Structures are given as structure tokens and as C-alpha cells.
Amino acid sequence: GAVVSQHPSRVICKSGTSVKIECRSLDFQATTMFWYRQFPKQSLMLMATSNEGSKATYEQGVEKDKFLINHASLTLSTLTVTSAHPEDSSFYICSARHRGSSGELFFGEGSRLTVL
Amino acid sequence: KQEVTQIPAALSVPEGENLVLNCSFTDSAIYNLQWFRQDPGKGLTSLLLIQSSQREQTSGRLNASLDKSSGRSTLYIAASQPGDSATYLCAVSTGANSKLTFGKGITLSVRP
Figure 1 (tube, rainbow over the protein chains, first blue to last red):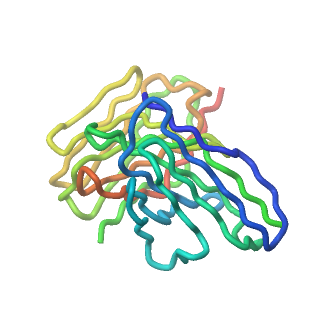
Figure 2 (figure 1 turned 90 degrees about the vertical axis):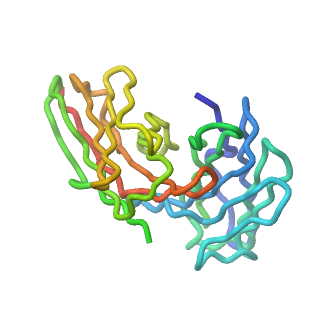
């Protein structure tokens, strides 16, 4: 299957700093990427939908100024958690939809963010 | 609003057993349904994708079926192995570019 790479896999930061997470589709072009957040033993919560070259569409209750999403190319989307606080600590997962495919989604390995 | 349910939340079986994981969804107007596997602390691995026009898909020991009219899908795992222990999630999409709606997953434990 197609490969989606997410980096970093783990990051620890101090409260008030900003953290950037990258999501890359390695062997395919992805017109749409999705960012999810997952709490322990919970399912994935969609945060936003990112389309290449346009502004991201955020789900209700997700602060767009807090979670900045950029989808600058067909293979790269970034999520920046600005002024991170301990409550932002979570597992963040991106997924990419294969351009021209039957709608199948491929997921990255996830990024564990811990804010001290 | 589409809702996806997976029951039970957890399942423990002895090695070698054939098992069925259930998934139900409230809105039958889906585009496709996807089954994923998630290991602890990891991302999701796509297992099977079923288009709305299809009734089943097979990959190795896995077989997924779809009954769109009744809002149900099953993931059949043959001859289960300890390495199959993971959380299995199903998700549905309402369009080619639409988001996925996930169930909460079934945590499977296969005992040696």
C-alpha cells in the first residue's frame, strides 16, 4: 500500500512553545490530507481537512489559530500546535487520500506530543 | 449524522479460533467502508477497503463483508494468531473526497 510518513514520532516541549508536525505522502500524490487527534483508548477525532493549495477546513470546536495547518504541496501537509499547553498533549495522526484512487485513506505512524 | 458502532469494545480469543468483528453504521448512503488495524502507540494500517457497490473483499486470512442496506459490515479473521492482537477500527465515507467517520474500535487479544 501507499506510504505516509509522519515526523516527528515523539516530541516533548515546554508550555508556550510551538511544535510543527509534518505529514508526507512518500510514493503518491495526495490532494486531501486529514489531521486527527486521539486520546488514550479513544477513537480518532477529526480535527481538520487539508486540501492542497487552499485553506484547511476545521471541525467544530477545533481552534484554527491554535492548530495551524498548511498543505503547500501534493505530498506535504504540516500541523503546527501554537503556544502549546499541557492539555494539548495527545497523539496526532495524519492521513492522506491517494489522488485518483477509490477513496482509500492511508495513515501516518502518528506523533506523540507531550507538553510539560 | 453518520454514527459508526463497534461492539464489543474488547474481545479475547484463543489462538486458532475463527472470529468475526462487527461494525454498524446509521446512514446507508456510504461511498466506501474501510477496516483498519492499530497497534498500541502506532498509526493505522489499512486492511481492506470495500466500495459501496461491492459485497466483500479478501486479503489473506481477512475477509470483510458489506451489507449496505442493513448498515452492517463484518471483518472475518481466520485461524487467529497472537500477532493479530490489536485494535480494529472500521470507518465509513460518504463521498470520494469526504472525511471518514470512525467507530471506537474493537481491541482484540489472541491468547497463545
